[in-house]
Length: 385
Image (cartoon, rainbow, N blue to C red):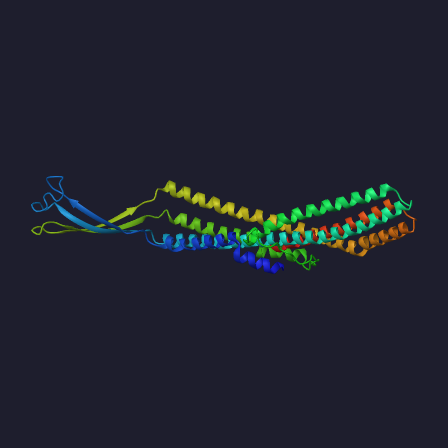
C-alpha cells in the first residue's frame, strides 16, 4: 500500500476530521443568529374593575378592557453588524482549525507508515542474518568435530542467534502496536488485514533553511489559526465597545372595552441604557484576550521556527551519516567480514573474530536503517510545519 493511498483514506474516513468539519459548519450557523433581531413579543392583557374575577366591569366601566399588543427590541444601529462580524471571524477560526487537525493526522499517518516500513525492512535484515548465523553455527560445529575449533565457538554463535530471534520477536510486537494505531487513524476495523508498506528510501532535502522559515510564516496551520484568532478578537473588541450604546424597544397595543365605550390604542417606546461598569469590564476582557492572542501568535511562531531549524539540522546531519554508511562503513565492514570468514575457513582466523565482524556488519546495517528512518521522519515533520 502506498503512503498516498493511506493519506487519502485518512482524509476521507478519520472521525476527528469529520468532527472538526461539523464543528466548523456549526460555527457558520451562528452568523445569521448573531445578526438577527431579537425575538418579537406578543402581549395579552385583561383588566378587571370592581372585582378580581375575569372580565369584571367589562360591560359597565370604561376602564375594564381586553388588550393585545406586540413589541420589538431594536439594538442600537451597528450592534448586529459587529456581532455578525465577530461570529464570522469565529467561524473562520474553526475552519482554520480543521487545517491543524488534518496536518496532525497526516503527520501521524506518515510517521506510522515510515516506522512500519523501517520495521519491515529491518525484520528482513534480521531474518537474513539469522540464516547466515545458522550457516556459521554449522561451520563452527564442523570445525569442532574435526578438532579445529572449540565448543565455545558453537555456543557463542548460538547465543548470537538467540539475540537475533529476540530482536525479531520485539519487531513483531512493535509492528502490531503500530498497525493498531495506524488502523485507528484510518478508521479501519482492527481485524482487517495488516498494512504492508513500500520500501524505505532516502528523500533528498532540496530547500534552504531561509525558504523553509518563510514557508512557516506563510503556510503553517497553527500560525494561520493564531492570525484568525487575532482578527476574531479585534471584532470582539469593536463589538464590546458598541455594546455600550443604548437599545430601544417599540410596542403597540390595542385595548377593547364593551362596545358602548371607546377603544384604547397605546404606543410605547422604551430605551435601555447598559451599565457602564459592565460594558467597561467586557471591553477590558476583549482587549486582554486580543493581547493574549497576539502573544500566543508570537510564541507559536517562534516555536515553529525553532523546530524547523532543529529538523533541518537533523536532516542535514542524517544525510551526511547516510553517505558515510553508503560510501565507507558498510562496504568496508562487509569486506572485513568476508575476509575474516575466508581466513577462518582456511584455519587462519579465530571464530570469535568472525562473530565480531558479523555483529559489526549487522549493527551497521541496522544503524543505517535507523538513520534513514530518522531522516525521513524529520522530513515529514518539516513538511507538516
